Image 1 (tube, one colour):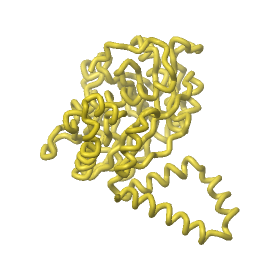
Image 2: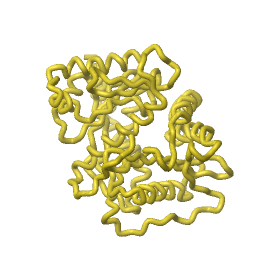
Image 3: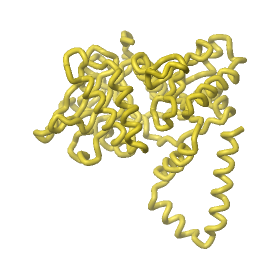
Length: 356
């Protein structure tokens, strides 16, 4: 999956989120080359990958609701089917995608570019929900017009930023495995022991290094990984994924240093654009580094377990803000029974749409 065609021309920002989704598909496909099997019966690898009707690619994580790797890898399903003269098979193909998700007992997610209205409607028709995404969640930087100089910041002497390389480092397997623990802890993944083992299993299999399509940088203190990130090169752009720092080590500039290292890496590799989907916590850092907002993709998800209902409520609460919610409750506390009644109706409608 070597990226030989780099996007160098001017492009509308509305298209950059589409390139991010394409790159993310390449990112997942590369992971699947090492960590996925294509058989329901073969459980020797942690992931499964299927090309439904030899058209639409999907990746699944059996029995893992909190995995990033439960996704449809094509961002405009209807366009792909139209180009293949299979548009009349759209509903059947979606049902097959959902059938695999049911067999693997996991949710399935699909990123949809803003202009793919037909795909959005198709997924809604089959019970997919749209997750809330902040207007500035997707960010990009154009290295051709970046005003600031790209150079690494000074960190505490006990912090080291370095790149993992399977070809030259004897302990790379162990470091990638350790990365699974760091990733889970940083994202507050529930059932920590189970998911640490899962992500360690996935990433210990994936080949990384300066000559691979995925570059992996880590931050260490006393030879222990406390943060890291991935840079993915595919579909003409560089994308930054999984910039994380363990909670106990935040506020030391580690996230900024990792992001800068990724940016330097992408620019030196000849890429014009780097794109990311950032958390609220990281957006301020990215803005200072020169990133700018682009129109977000729609993220659609079909749920498989009740756990994801709570996750959606958590996301909504995060977007609203706890203080704002508390003030709202205080202002309407005399009508709390009515509010609970309305809330119960909303939840019932959501569940009913999913089960349709």
